[in-house]
Amino acid sequence: MNFFDVMMLFETHTMLGILFWSNLFLAAMIFTFETTTKTIQDKNYVHGAALARIVFSAAYLMLLLGEWIPNIILFDLGYGILFFCFYLDACLMLSFLSKADKKMKYILQTILAIGIIVFYTFEIILMDDTIRSITTSCVIMAIYGVPTVYFISKKSNSRFKRVIGGFYVLFLISLFPRIVIPVIDIIYGDSTHDFIIAHSGFYLVLIIITISGIMSTLLFIKERSDIMLENMALNDQLTQIPNRHSFLHNASLLFLKCQREKRKLSLLYTDIDYFKKVNDNYGHDFGDVVLKRYALVIKESVRQYDLFCRYGGEEFLMMVESDKVSLAEHLAQRIMERLKSEHFDEYPDFRFTVSVGIAEGIPGEKDTLDTYIKNADEALYEAKNGGRNTIRFYQNVTQDAV
Image (cartoon, rainbow, N blue to C red; front, side):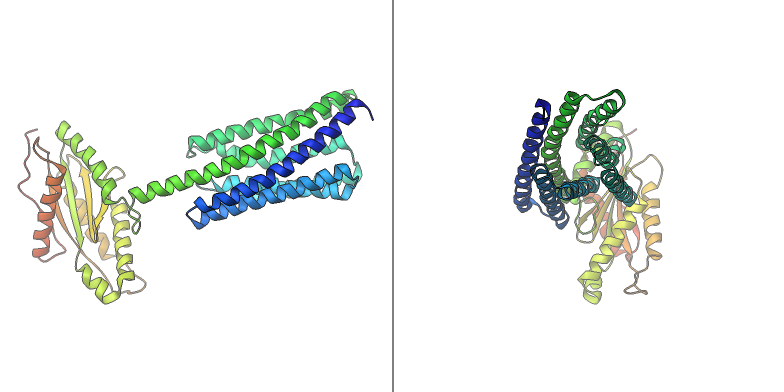
């Protein structure tokens, strides 16, 4: 055994030992992170990540024992488990994409199956360290290549996800020497020194990717939690449309814009007719169904840039900007017409109507958003007194000349 053989043996043992203990430590750290998660899905992510790290540790332990105690079965079993761990890690990465395609997981499963078959075929036939190095690196590159491509290419991904994708690109590039150098050795002769550098560098990269990968997982979970908190702050939790707070913020900006540019603005104040009777006669659960259905009708009726919200209880507001005559009235009529065709499986004969009050005009210098809401509310009161299921306009909105 020459000097480089001794160095390689020492480096392999050291690196495998570090990988074994670091994965155990990271698994314990992930479990402690579970207490900060809020949803079942995030807890499942934590459990999956921790389980993967424990299995990683078992695989590295088998490889370590295979180095100390020459046992080809133990050694090869460790590699098989390691491939499966890389597959789990890649699946975990894909699960953080906003629209993860099931086809991606099928592709990963195919790559894993082919990789294991090819690896064990070469092991049985050749049992060569160089071929093992090439095969292992190719399988890892293929497995991680799938989520890396999607992290880089998906336009809807956040900047954070693109950075993580870029980091994995560097990881995949770092595997090339472990493939290229052994191939060069086979073609042009033995170059043990270069192989040792590539071999040791590979384990160093695994240590870096292990620590960085798990930190990325925890940051992904935090990013999801932040998005969830933002959604709770801005959206009504029952109807999943903007809530009063977010509407007033955006409506204030639109109001000031129309006031400054002398543009026509319409505010629609709507209320579900006899909603109390809906709750009394059919129950509050069905009342919630009605609220969600009406919110969906509004969402599908307004334009992409119009503002709308659940203002409170069974009251909903919409704000539209347009120079077209009677745009707000057409919108209200479209919604009321749509409600006639709404069908509920629980109560097929049930239908509901809404009353609408509209305040519109070009906001004057003394006008405020609160004024428009108050005026639309007064128009809604007139609509209800006028028999409900009707539209009424507030006629006295102060307007400046265009």
